[in-house]
Length: 629
Image (cartoon, rainbow, N blue to C red; front, side, top):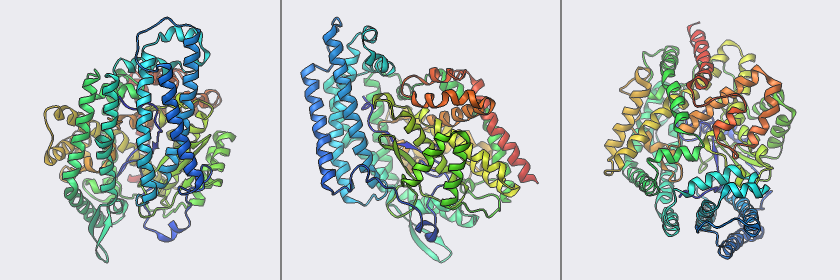
């Protein structure tokens, strides 16, 4: 079973040209990048090679080993159900306190090491420490398997009646009891965890390393140059259509050269996930993903129905963008082309000031949080070789997070900072909870980020002249189109891959055709059918996670749920504020439907999702009007 409650990384709301990013991609401006900050993680350890780090690493390992000894001594594993007595309650409270402590310590250690790996994939010391920690995470994952099995052996209702600590973790315990019903034997689960390191995890790492180090020759103004794939993909944002086309063709050629090992990786990961899912009694991997996401099939169906209804509206946006660019139809390489000519460049300092100001319009607490994040250097904004693309936010320690970005001096770069800091604000609201109480699913992990991003976007629109409003709306609609339309294509693709992978491996050509067919179904006549992207399955690292299948629909949920909450905020600001921070602090304490009901939202019917999409439809109408004028 998936290792429960391991350290989480919250990625940016949607992949636009690659995972976890939108307009905050690598900037070609060296002078702009030179002044951008790098994050400071010395609050945890001075450096990876410091005595303090070595001591902290060994202390974490010792804590995992001690937890294992406690589990052995107390018989924490699947067993026959016995009557609940005072001794059993005391054992539960002692074990969960220790488990929370070890999880928190290991999560901070993991985040600290990730801070170096993510900013320099060629840092051999960081890579070695990450690999070393991974072995101990396997031990912790095996203990997590035993923990879930033990909870499944208990009378949880009786435990809740006798323990306040249990009541504080009620959702976690009830979910663990359901999860236990889908476990294999302890020996099989531990073997699956062990083999995952050299199976799914290793294949996923291959995709990350191969794509981050892939060199692609592309014809530029000064001749043919070999660029990292990330920089080639960044050319999709260039204003020169011919350059975008050449970069797109070079990108496809680059993925074609790497397609065989990447297809092997994808086949292996999906084969592993499908086999384990069936062995654990899930009807499909999607059912397991929905369980992990804390939503049910009715919610997914309602959301996807509303999304499909909106596709004609998104195609109107794509056709309007084509008119703005002076082309008959958008090719894939036009999806991220700039529209508008305001010439406004948002420097990092300007962006920081604007984000702080707009967060302050919501609350002084949110303003103070943003000021602290910039002041204490929580953000790594500088694009540089070896640094991971895109943007993400990760919890580090206490109430502190760290934000990775590849800042571009444009509205999209500023918007991404607001989005990622929204994740950090969410983490701050979760800080008083125990580590197990913070286990937020992907569906709810985007709640604060979308909300904060929307606050900033609406303020920017109000202040902007017409030409700049086009740019702001375009940046927003570009992301929304990716989340609703492209995410649906990825969902369709992954569903088809899982279905066919049960019978055999899929070839490079078959994966490409499935990808194209998914794009045809969703984009339809909004894009030139002769210029789609058959290698998006190779480019998107989301497909290569053995622990997170269907790493797509949660992004759509996050966008539309966040927009729906923003609509409630504008309708009743003070009433909304009274419950919002508490909602953020509770995202690991209940399923999504229960939490949504606090704001009288029914996520199992299409009406709520349609209302959220209406906000996007209004932006599309405004964009069409501005383009036409």
